[in-house]
Image (cartoon, rainbow, N blue to C red; front, side, top):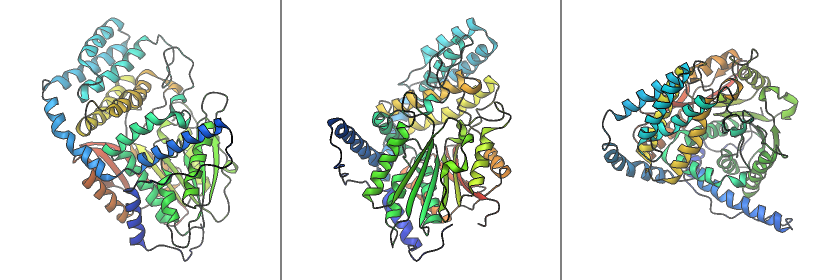
Length: 483
């Protein structure tokens, strides 16, 4: 860890700055690269600038927008839901579970009849449970009709698709629809936004005295998380630390498996240039994260090391597939890095059972909460809501229901289970920063629907909808380090 310097900002001012940044939008245009000469390069640059503007909108939208969306929809959706019989959801849920049981037992005739009934009752533009059923029925149909072939997440029946293909992003400049959908999600639901804010604040508070901050991000994807932190670092009195980011992710199909990570690096470099933060980027493209070696991370003496993994731990294989569990192997790797802080965000789920019907029922409970959440916070004709439900959630559900073995990559565990794994790997949990928690709780109360919950449980920040825990975040250090 770097020695303390005299550039530490006052704690209250730093907190105030974080809040201002979280509620602001960037309007400054990026300066074009003077060295780009060809039309193709200029067009690509224009795409990246346009995408950066979307990044600003997605990551730095105002809390006021969230409040407006959350409050305006409640009465509208309530009146629409009343048009269906009160027991309609229960009947549809019973039918879905019964169909899953028929599929599991190999009773194709019974399963096909029930699938037809579910089709008649479900709708991608209906109420929450109708939308949920429209997604789950596709998974059941895929499992029933696969005929022994494997189904990869995002793939089709019988096709040989890489198991992790759907987790790998397309070219960054092709993701505008996904980014816009995420913007709607962030404005109506706090889960992702507050998980990112929690991680950024905890890293900032613990690393703000460092001269070099090295972030090792498992599952960096588009780099959604880091522009806010970059601006925070730029405002430190005396100047920002050097920022090193090691971005780890899966290879994308095709001739340039590292292209998406390279584009992420370029975009983050532009943010750092914009805010005068010294920057170094190290992309690591690898299918099996447990095979990463310490030397690949290019650790340097004296730097502050922050390991970050938000909602990607659950995509690692577990003991049911490998005797040497990749989840535990990655945790062991992180422990060997000797990080100054390890921030983990996990989906809290119990739908990882090897027994299909049990897994189906647990997934039904988890996703019913998510679809209900959208029904209370977004209009039913919102196209970005439809995109999120029918594209992103649908792919996850299809993988949970229709895939087995290595093809099934959606394998969430509860945060209590992750607690056991982390402790066994040689970590101890850090106390939650009460100033940070107070700020985040205030954000939920002021900016989101009243049925969202955020509370503390055993030094985990837990988020949920009504009585269902959806996700949790925590910070860890190796046992031999002092808090």
